[in-house]
Image (cartoon, rainbow, N blue to C red; front, side, top):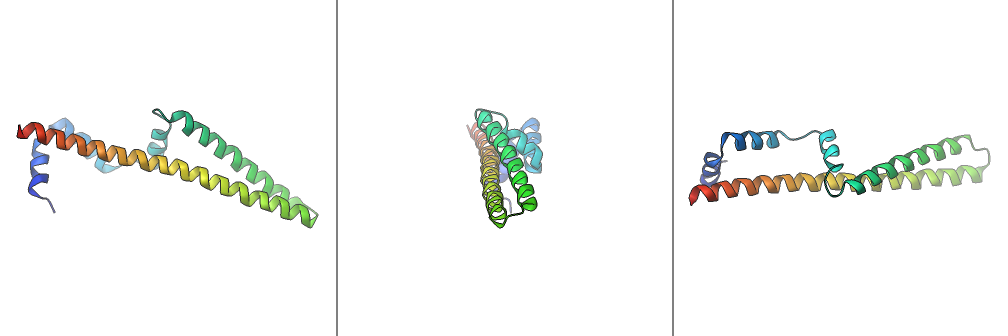
Length: 125
């Protein structure tokens, strides 16, 4: 449901701004959002977490392979515990990455709103 404010806001946008906002409303795919996390001031941390996640996942698969091929019950339990702990670490790392993606998405929405309000403010002056 469009309000009078929304109508005035849409009328105040230039064609370029309208195209920009329309592109944002279409949304970005998962890989575009992941790529966005690897840019900007936090890119070092994003690369670091991504690398750590990959290494820990490889360790989890190795531990799983060792647990599957273990003969002794104690070995099976220890390697299986390692699998569980390493996959938990992968989950926490992925959670950080997805929270970063969410933050960037919210910042994009705030910038969009800021653009619209600024243009409406200029129009009303």
